[in-house]
Length: 146
Image 1 (cartoon, one colour):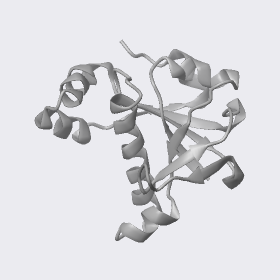
Image 2 (tube, one colour):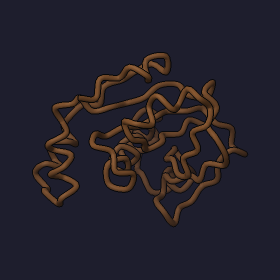
Image 3 (cartoon, rainbow, N blue to C red):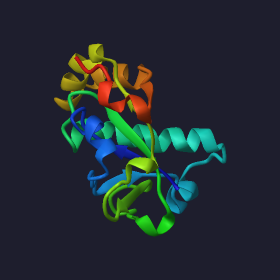
Image 4 (spheres, one colour):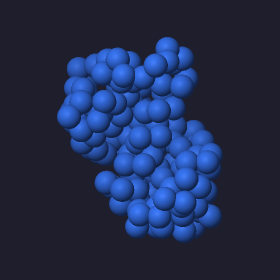
């Protein structure tokens, strides 16, 4: 199961140590499939990724949107629809070998992130229009964040 994990910029280098233990991630869950009127796998994955991106700044407190993507087995996570239709609880540490990639805002997005977290709807809309940059798992220790 591909999971999208809200993270902070400080989590990126830690992903490779196999000790990272995030409690919540987002995925294309049965509940998400029930409520979204699409069967496009890419669109559904993008929804889960975008929810994780927003959670990274609102719930986790990252100065930029950061989403780490991992491949986990179903026994390693359980759906938690009370948190969000796409939410899953992760059991244990994320092995470095499970990390596929990460999506990260470019550093110039930091002002919009701060404003959006403060309730600025226009800033949130600008963030939603921004593309997240893709980084391979081998690049996570050197992602430019400032």
